[in-house]
Image 1: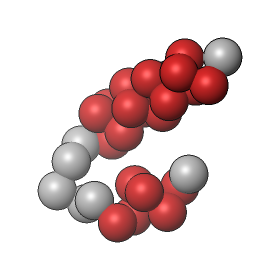
Image 2: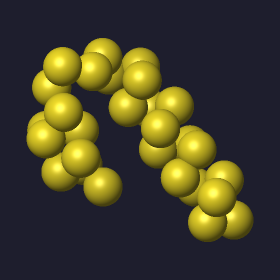
Image 3: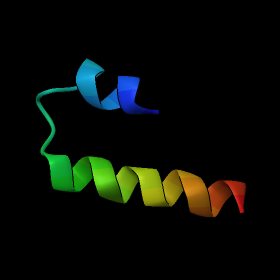
Length: 28
């Protein structure tokens, strides 16, 4: 999951956190 963040450095860290939460919600 962290690889996604390093793969998209153009996006801020806050956005990454939100994206992670979104993925977790989808999985939940």
